[in-house]
Image (cartoon, rainbow, N blue to C red):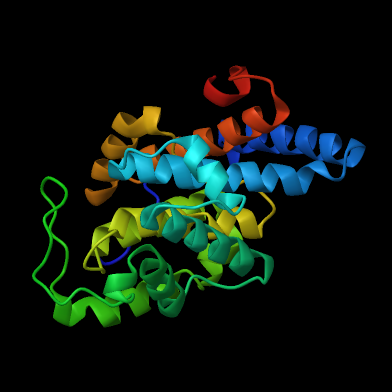
Length: 253
């Protein structure tokens, strides 16, 4: 896959853009009334991101375990690694960093210390039906090209952070650049874009697994719209949880 175009029209008029804007305004009003809650909410969001990301990988982890580990308790290696990766993404977002090859390698290394964050040396991986990742000899160039695309003006200035997150997620899944934890790395790395723009991280909840798998499969065949739509729902759900509104019409209407 040379590049992942957005195969849908009238992007600026998406209904979800306005829904997320209204949710953000409501949350910012809540933070203005209680400034300390933003730090508490960030901790809760990070724990949720780790929990659901690991559950999607198939790990039998409990949310209480993740929350305890984040507070300084003992943690299984998978939980500790995912928490470290999420913390690194949040720090990168606060510093205005870009999603570079070195950052992707660092995140994968935090998730898989034994692998030391290196590119895949083995044959192409057939993870998705009808799709094959590139061979290892092409990965260094393709990862560099992908992250250069993320720096393009059209990507940085014309796309909503949710779209940026979706396309970054899809591109890493497309390349399968690491020996392991490719989707986990992609799900955590994608949140750099919304976090950097002041939005919640993208938390693909485990109950959305079927929709998530379907969206990624569509993206492997050049239809990115389902992934963008799914991630917009995930950000809306995060705001819903923060505001304590429950899942309301702004999320799914």
